[in-house]
Figure (cartoon, one colour):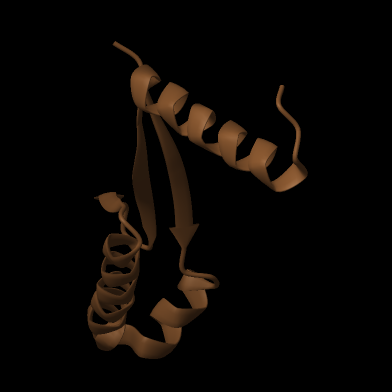
Length: 87
């Protein structure tokens, strides 16, 4: 069964410099960033799949083929209503 999803990847810019400057506080900083990333991804219906040190892999499941076909039908009908076309 095929499932459609959107994957996102983000990392902390200049992590080496952050590590150098923050020293022992780097994990507090990373955990603060992780909390923000996880909260916002969850807020928008996604999941943080993996934390890779200074990077995060995020996933938003779109659905299977049936859900995608239903969505395409809804958007097609809405487009036809807004343009006044029938096909």
